[in-house]
Structure formats: structure tokens, C-alpha cells
Length: 175
View (cartoon, rainbow, N blue to C red):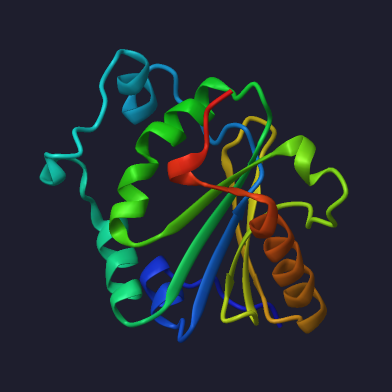
């Protein structure tokens, strides 16, 4: 019987030690006409000094998770030169870091010999996977949960392989 997909507060709330997230797409559900990406394209940038203007429920959740002693790490595999959407992500990543996430970037060419799952995932305590499925245009096609030990091992090894090669956010230079 498939596991139900928990809410983000439930998923991160269940973590006792580690949460890792691997992102491998160059764009996600981009709305060029409205929303944060469109605002960024028009020149809007978050002001690091004006925390109230960019702090949002997701960052509260990450901050609370880290405050409980859970390590939250995110790795992004990106094509270089990066896509416009990746530039948008990069510009806003300081908010994730401020919330307590450790974020790293890896050029896709540097991942060429790593065994990677076919889709992005979240891995909680090296045992519970939330697969993130997407359509061809980057729209969400829903999440799926798994506790399969072999899949969890694949995800853990893939993430650590990426992490060991990736560049910390503060040192990554957009190309």
C-alpha cells in the first residue's frame, strides 16, 4: 500500500537527524507573466536587510527544523552556463541559508559519473523519501513517498556524491 504524501510541516517535523534535498532541473514551473519569477525578471531583488519582506512560512519551517538540531542540506545540480531560472534561484538562496539550510551547487558536468535517481527527492533520516515528480515544462506532477531501503540507499549515496563535489553557496560563481 502506497504511503500518503505528508504535508511539509509533517515531513520535516518527522525528521530527527537529517533532511537532504537534491534538485536536478534547470527550471521549475516557471510563470513568466506573474509571480516571483516575473518580479525578479522585472528587476526585483530581495533586500537582505529587510527580512520581513522575504521571510515566509517555508523559511519558518526550515528554521524550526534546524533549531531542533536537524541538519538540512540542499544540493543543486545545474547546467552551465546557468538558465535564467537558476539565476533567479541563486539570487534568492540567501534566504534559505538565513533559515539554516546548507546549500551547495554542482555543475552538471561534474556529476557526469555519479549514479543519480531519475527525479528530485527529499530524504529524511536516510530512510524516508519524498520523490518530486515534474512534467516536461517543470510543473509539479505530485509527490510520492517511499521507505524502500534500496531506494533510500541510492538517494543517500547520490546526495553524498553530489555534496562532496559541490561548491558551497557563498563560494559558487554563476557561469
